[in-house]
Structures are given as structure tokens and as C-alpha cells.
Image 1 (tube, rainbow, N blue to C red):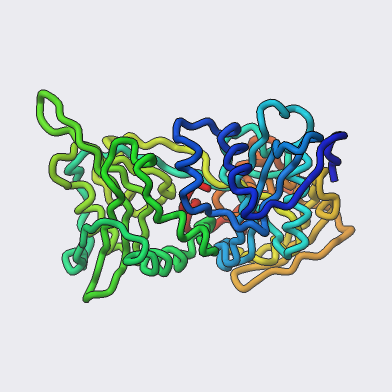
Image 2 (spheres, rainbow, N blue to C red):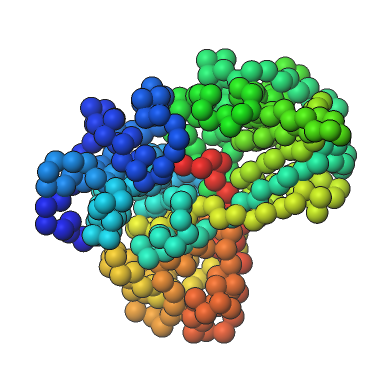
Length: 414
């Protein structure tokens, strides 16, 4: 592991370091919100997974933590994943190797906990590739005009939508149950009580001039079949009301619930546009819109995946077609992953073993992470020169097997 430079020491963090952690976070991610106010809010961090770095004078100058995703959805299965988060270095201590040491510390501790995969949502795109993280998912942002036409879906008229003020006590269990039942790859569950409490916290400082948090609940025969988190922000122009609806997390159990929910969200009084972020590129709304161009789609980066224990990670997911491929993998930071591996698998499971056979494909662990959730094609990576095909046709066969019927996306930004 990359050692810390002289004068720096790695330390475990506890709840007693709450204020210190927030101070470093404010240096790494500047914000106008007063630190005393932030200190009052529930913190999503699980303290036993939080680490820091102290300088020679005792000052905490860098932090990182991870979320315990105990049932993280991967293609066809769920597996433990370490959600790297709260990574920050004081600007006065940059370019000294603190980040490299912390990332490798995270990898080591994740492996010790039996987490074969690490996932993150990157603040900056250029940072994490050099640590072996691959860009595995993209998300869609839409700005939809009010009243945008939607295609009809049978049964949508049997779904009732209730619009109420969001409340952690009233809606926490409902949101957790519906959210964590989603099996789309990358849909990170909020596995800890700390994450669940922080998600429904609604301080005025987060609202950016909008109303308090609301929730639209889709119900069929009295049973919740979906929800959407939203806020409205009023705006008046000479030509009339031009309010904006900001839609956050959306979860639906079926197509009828999606159609009913979006039918209400896209037609709220006094609103002119509906802003929707973090949708999967194949989200139901994309297909329901009659005029998707008018929604001004913007593609954004989403999840990054790092394979920590290659044979365990590849065996933890399913494959949509039979596959028998030899992968020659490079991994400069975790040498145990490097070498040749035979992957034999399909829809019912997989086995991964070391082999001396000639490789079909050669790639870095970064590209393997990019393909892991089924949203990035190995053949596409080969076309970009990032995967080497030694046996003609092997990239296409592997791409078909690694792919998945639905696109991956993270349910929230952490």
C-alpha cells in the first residue's frame, strides 16, 4: 500500500470527530451554508467505516468513508459493495499522496470485510480512473415542458396519486421498502439507518428557494406501488406563472404506476417546466414521452465501479448468455487480480478460475469495472482500443454475455 508521507498518520474516526470531518468536507467542497447549521443535520456516515489523516501538528487534513451496501444490485443478483464516499483533502495538503494512500486504505479494508466491489459517484471525472475505477453507468437529465404528451398505458387510470408533504416518520418505511426492492444494477440501497435518516432530512438550506419536500405516492387498491420526491419553485413572468417542478428520486413497481405518476407530475398548476435528474437512460419516462426532444435530454456520468476481488466479483453476477472466455487482466494496485482468468457462466451463475490458457481478451481492471454492471459494451471498449481482442469474435461474445436487459443507474448521488 502507498505509505503516507512523513509527518502524516492514518486514524479511525468516531462520532467525536463529527465537527472535524465537516470542517474538512467544507474545505474540499465549499458551500455557503454555515458549519454550525450543517452540524445539526443527520450524518449518513457509518462511523466504524470512516477514516482520516492527521498532519504532524494533529490537525485532521483528509477524510474518507464508505457506505455498507449489503445487497447492492448487480446483473441478476445482489452482492456486498463498499460505497466510497466523503473523500476530501484540505487544499493546503494536496499533491502529497494523501488521496492515493486513502484509496488504497479503502480497498484493503473493503477486502477485509468481504466486499469484492467498490462503487462511487465521482465529483471529478479525471480522478478515479487511475485507481482502477471504470465508468460503469450514465444517467439522464430531462427538462420537460408542462403538459408534455405521454403515451397511454393500460391500467394507469386505476392508480391513484396522493400528493403530501414528505415526513420521515410517515413515509420512511414506505420509501425504504419500495426503494430497496428495485433490482436495477447500480441502484444503491440505503442499507444503514444513518443513510435512511439523512435521505428524508429536509433543511431549508437545501431547497434553493423552493418549497419543502413533497412526496407523490402512487396507490392501487390502497397499496403503494410507487413514489416520487419533488419540490416546486414558484416564478412569475409578465406572460404568467412559470414555476419549476424539481423531481428527485422516482420509484415505480410497474408501467401503469409510472404512467399515472408522470401524468400528475407533468401537469401541476402554475408550473412551466419539470426538471428530472438521475434517470436511467432507459427509464420508463423516456419511452412514454411522445416528444422526447422537447425534454432537452442531457447525458451525465453516474456510477464508477472498482473490482477489488476479481474471481469473487465476476462470480457474484449473472450473465445474459453463456460465456466461456479467458481474460488477461492488468491491475497495478491490486496485483492479486492480475493474470489470466477463465470465466465460464450464464444466466444461472458463473465460475472464475486462474488459467494458463491463451487469452481471448486483454484488458485493464478499469475496463472490467466499466463493463461490470452491464451498461458498457466490451466490444465498444475494444473499438476504442481499450480492450485487446486476441481471438476474433471474442469481444462481441463477451459483450453479449456481460450486457443486461436494463441500463444501470445509481438511485442517488452519494
